[in-house]
Image (cartoon, rainbow, N blue to C red; front, side, top):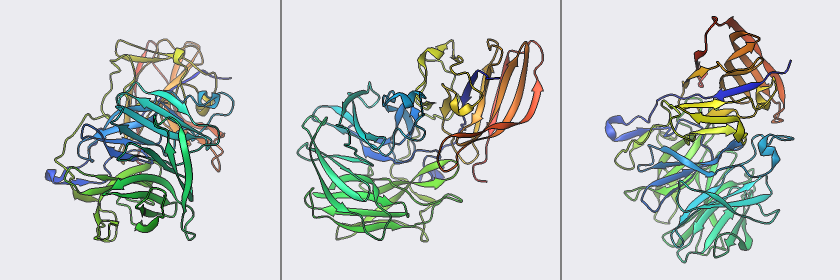
Length: 463
């Protein structure tokens, strides 16, 4: 029998960066999956962090910090994934597509925030807002085939807007005066032949010189420079296969260069950390007399601790309790794909999820509400009121990725039961098709008259 499936997905724990006597911080600075960061200083002196979010909606998450270590979640650049029916789970859902390495900046001349990203290797979308927290709107779509893959935006001293983008063959696009169209684009270099391509392009102008930061999937970070935006460009290596400070952490991935409050520069990157994702790390860099940056390593590896870039300023903790007291979700919550907005409501400190899909497959269920895990031992706790569930409805709390487990309440006639299911699986080879709906590991009936239950997930992501 097909079942009406409503799933609330969350895993979170109160855990902040370690402030060793307020002089040193401990990596990672955000123990959560925020890949492909674009970090920069905003007009108010604060730092802003834009990241990938794939098929999760809203997209383009934005974090804010004053010290580059303590971050708060303030919003999203892309309110709805308005990229086609596959982002509404219609037809073939666009698993792990959507928002990849994109870029965001503030333009002082027109007091406008810009977000630019290529969706599905085909169209480049531009979103704008009068304030970093919105309202954001889709302002332009570049012609089909114009893909600013892994892009970095620079607003030059004369207010001209440039975008660096590409995989292996790196290009510069000059944007129109309003930033919503393209004037020209030109290939400026190709990655070294001994590397398996370069990507993750970030474009800067530092002391009159243009720089592009990019990386290779082999764990190599490159820095390129030129005195003219169109070249010629030369390069050196910023780091090669430096060890991760995370236990069992993988390769260092793409990231950003950013100048701290005291003038010290930093490399904000991330480390692969299965199953948590790509976890943000930060380390200082040093500049040579010749104008090349290099990573400050500790014993040949990315340091687990460095001196604070600025006086620590702990901000709103997004991993604590959420009473759902507002009229909208807090920014730390994202739906798996665009939700059916007619199938949830807010009232009296609750979010109510209505059956949006009739299915026995978690990966086919619409309106799955998600919260990133945080820390090496994340914990998620939720109170579930199931008094209005219909016969066949299921609702629960899950550890959600391509291999999932969850606790759920299921109604069968007048009977309610709670059960634990594990090993629901997608795959293999990134096919994202469901190969298992999971196995019931435990099951027990709930006492008659019960209408609420507390559910908790606990994970050890370091196993």
